[in-house]
Image 1: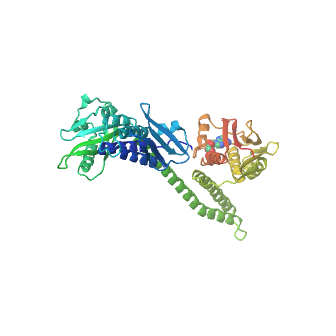
Image 2 (image 1 turned 120 degrees about the vertical axis):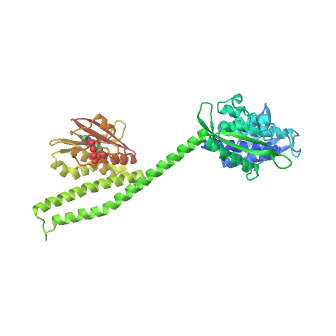
Image 3 (image 1 turned 90 degrees about the vertical axis):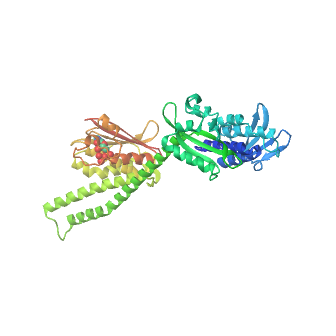
Length: 491
Ligand code: ADP
């Protein structure tokens, strides 16, 4: 069984260990506490757990369900004396399991030891507070004891040490302790404690901030119970635990922020997808009618009107292109882009793409060329491969100069991948701009140059290539031209 530590599991197990020891402190029945511990551990792990032990009287003792199969067995000892065995459902590394269950095993050893000293039915054995403290230290937790009659916190040195103070600096009363609590948290803590004292809660539990010796605020989690009352019911002694949970809270906060950012990003993606989709319908109508008017034999437009209609259509087509790119980008981001991966003949697809941009190239007096070579197949999506090449070819043409050239080469890269190189003799891209060339809406040196573009083409290109398990590389030198290489897995 794979055994990856889960976030929160360590905390849950420490909590189970703490609760069992507190139960023992309150009831003085170690066997009851052991039962709680075995049950709680099984629940936290989500796996069957049982315990076998022999007490000081030689009585065999099984706790939990029958031994699960298969299982991992851990041996409990104390000062080289065997105390029992713990069986955990599933097979995994004993060392890893031992490390994970450390607070549970420490408490279990302590409780078994105490159960051995006080056999079942022998009544309340006095819990050994010192030993329990030692066991809990493994769970980064310390035990406090509060005598209410004289407001005395016994042995709080460990708790103060957690915060970098020494007991002589602070004092031993609840009032001394409270002085270190954040002023905003004092009242809520007192209310929680009073609720437990009045019997409204079974356990006193509260988290609050405390000032550490270096001045920073640390989050403390406190749990406790009244263990003794006067004859008239007034509480006289409370025992509890305290743990520094600052780091855990920071992790929780970071996880919340990440979830929040992901939700915001998903909402933005959804909004863009819907917007792009809604814009396409009226835009297609504009384009359709412009085309109809241009070619209407019944009412042919006057030459001036024809030119203006062409401008409407060209601007509309440009807008449609941008919207389609945007839709693709949002689809890829949201994982909604479906691909049909198959063996794609790269030279044939490159030829198709070249034919599609030939009109634009002629208009801008840019020559197109496909270098001779053998056909090569990539494992990719045919339509998306053509879209990628169209994007690169269009850029090579529009960021070129009259008399320039765009050359396509299909071949095998040194690592065996199928490669298509699109090389131009155009304007080139500066070093700084080249670093951001694949980022959405980045137009680099061409911002304000008058060449149409929205800066999405290359980000769509890269996203599509990566979706097809490939990669795209760019190199360029200003004034000499650029080279974009698409590398795809060979078929
Ligand atoms: P667009 O072309 O719509 O601006 P792209 O994402 O395709 O968006 O390109 C981003 C930017 O990268 C362009 O604005 C341009 O500055 C630069 N660029 C891309 N390809 C080339 C190229 N072949 N030659 C020079 N610059 C290029």
